[in-house]
Image 1 (cartoon, rainbow, N blue to C red):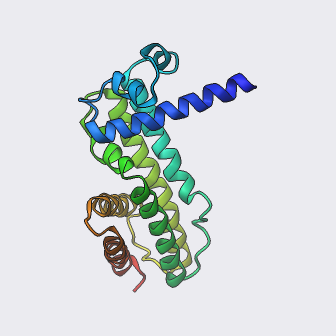
Image 2 (spheres, rainbow, N blue to C red):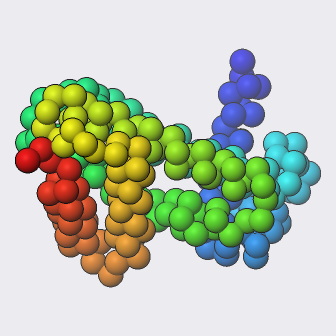
Length: 203
């Protein structure tokens, strides 16, 4: 049990260091030596846990997704009964995601820039699956609103969910790079929510 805990802790440390290196240097410029040096470990130690640079990058991306999912996993998409309650829920989701990306700007850099620049079929497929997964999650909120009558009945739910997520992720990316993140959060959150609700609320 102790050995397993030690292995898990070391893997987590390598993933965290790799996230920082990929964000700082970019995927193509980063080297295994950079990650090992950040942790003051030898190359041999690294290769006990991960096969190569692409393997560790895949694990970094999966760790990012797990963090983002955990931040909103306790929010029930079936809960809102009114448009106002849905707005409050959107505010909460936005606050949590903005907080994550603001606290860890490396996540934004890796997920929104580096992952798309890797010429690897599996990675590109995985990125599409991840964005589809977020789309499915957002679609549940929209389906609830349509069913309860506070969102438009003729809504193209799947397409709307993907469009909403694209706006939200762009907002997160912009907030991280803003010289005034606090002000940017307020503006972008208000912009995305107003854009959404004015277009999809029931008439």
